[in-house]
Image 1: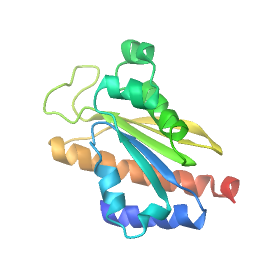
Image 2: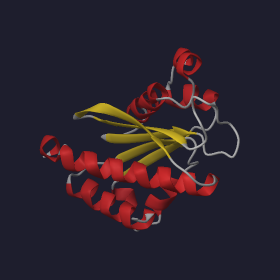
Image 3: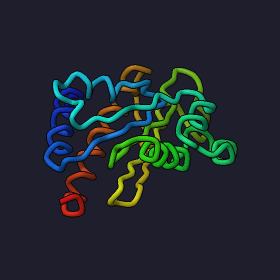
Image 4: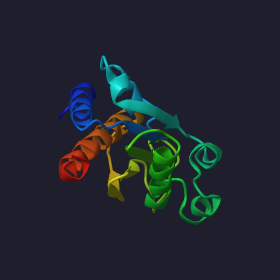
Length: 167
């Protein structure tokens, strides 16, 4: 399995090659993706900012997530992840954004959304926003790590898929 630092370096190379910058909105990962990115020397050339929006109030205030969305679908939903990614894009200078919201545990899960449920979204100026929900196993730390890796892989894949729209 790829590690965060290797993925961050690959992501940075792709963003830099396309003269793009990234913004993140993280909830359950608490800045783990942003931390891995800022380990890479020179990441300020392609990493604009990160929003760590752990509470619903932070999601509303910092990213413009709708209270209605949170009430109707919950913080851990593709709808919320979508609004987080769009909000990160809107409230930054970046051209691409990713968001993560989930249940890392050990508490907080339900029958509908068990521990390990994580919702992702990716949005860009030149491609439509996309969402996905994944389910991870393990303890709190391993769920957070798996979600962080999935975010970076998702960003890299979207840059590959949309490369022609950026150049």
